[in-house]
Length: 246
Image (cartoon, rainbow, N blue to C red; front, side, top):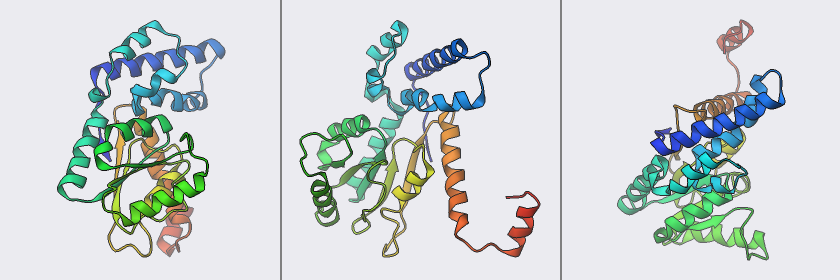
């Protein structure tokens, strides 16, 4: 994990979004349940994942709008850390990097800011592409064969499976923690293949002092459980499992 701390302005936005969503729940229900709060996670976490794209969400709130008007991507500690890491991995170590995120808006934003690395990008909302499968195949081929393409921006929804990228890359960044642990595992497996010559190095950006910590821990715990399901269980592990110890 790459731990980040909310910028003071982002912290204000996070608290305001939480307040708005909680007020909505309290107006709609006599009692607020854990499930209802969990269902709100995707909306609340948008202000953590990238406030710069939050303006496209439906929030008719003057205070939040004023905060968003003051916000700049350069304030985001996650973006700052990513920029520093890319400078080290690409410019200093001369390695290729894959960045995953579920939001097309975030991927487009990163694409514009890191043009110097000749980025390639694939997500389901790209415009002006008639044959998306052909476009996908050509970009994968370029990334696997041409050294000038240093960065690949991929959607966890559309590109975390069915492509092999281990030929020239071993570094993966998850800009936001996937909601689905399967997408996290499959994303890692784009370079962590049976023919890989090196271990895959994975950075997962997270804000541990927010709800993002719960999303991260849920994803990691689920991935760990999924990994165990196909492995042989030892007698000790079986005895512990039957006693309720995992």
